[in-house]
Amino acid sequence: MEYHFDLPVSTEKIRKLKVGDIIYVTGKIFTARDEAHHMMLEKDKDSLPFKPSVMALFHCGPLMKKENGKWQVISAGPTTSSRMEIFEDKFIEKYGINIIIGKGGMGERTEKALQKYGGVYTAYTGGAGALAADRVEEFSAVHWLDELGMPEAVWIFNVKEFGPLVVAIDSNGRSIYKK
Image (cartoon, rainbow, N blue to C red; front, side, top):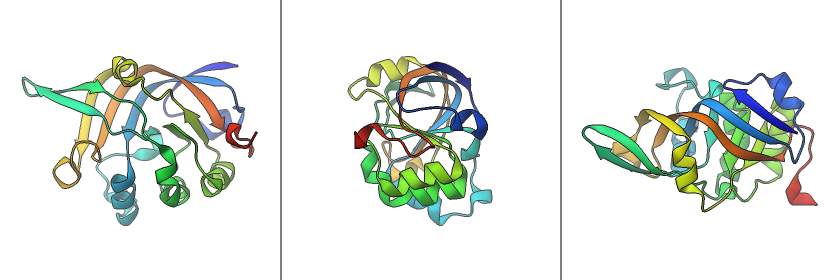
């Protein structure tokens, strides 16, 4: 099945998704790699300058360019998600994330957290960073750029019809990586 969602998406809708479904999302997404996960887990969730629970999490270190005082996305391909396995279950629990976008899959801890809290891990094609950048309608904000650097900073993008995203791990314990 194919679904088009405006973010945020209710847990009820997410729990209906099955491995192999295709989704497209419109709304705000935020990027977070290893260092951002680590930093955000150390912070009080109410002290963050944005609300992760209403966005999709994108495992991405985008290539950005500042031109005439405005940030532009040059490339925004997914990074290898398995690196975030050590953080992701705690991240899902703390921040209420219900859509994760990445590549390469996640492990058992993340799978269990997706089941418990009602989320999905979606796969985006690696090497398609320019295509992903085309789906970004607007750069919204950047956080911790000075502390973490461009690829590790948290970037918030307004996206339209971002995808195709393949549901690779659903909230019912199914995973394409286990077949």
